[in-house]
Length: 262
Image 1 (tube, rainbow, N blue to C red):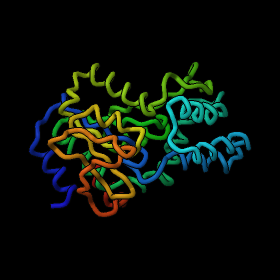
Image 2: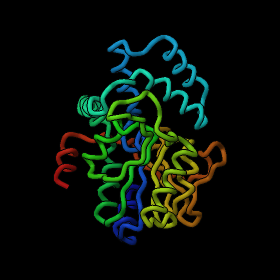
Image 3: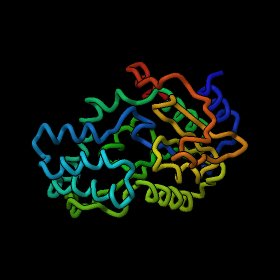
């Protein structure tokens, strides 16, 4: 059997019930690439990005891994230009960008895992540093009711251009996952986590069944069942058992038709 077949079989024959959660990262895990690229391209086409923000974005990409504070600063620069826009308008923009491009980047394997967890009655959660406008459309299509994301502040349904609390980057994501688990009687020791970034290693360490996907090595990588935890040695890459699939496949139109019937 392939690694995916093994995972699906373990989910199918494992314990069921809502006390077990399956936490999925969004960018690079559920979808191929980053939803921010679609949003950034839209803003460039509409001349919403100035030279200062563009320079900061490029420098952030060259700098390497970001801390939670650095990521928050980057997001804050990007959302200042949204001050005064209606929340509904941004939700509509998110739907449009999803239909125009993001929908086609859903990983077929990730979709199958999501559906497998739902069939077992697990509590499926998308936990992402992206905003609700970016991740919400996919969550709705997949029937995922629980979305932990970077929230934007509004006043009377109008964006203020500020963050509403922490970003879900690194420590912010693990804090949100732990708070969700505490509030929904989730047993993290028997729960599953799926992510791809180095910043998500603490989040993966919090669950009993962590699965890490990487574009370099295929989708997914996972730690030995006996260890039950991912290794952080070598920047979070070494120490993983390299049982992996072939290159990930984006979801086709037929896959989406299946998803809508599931």
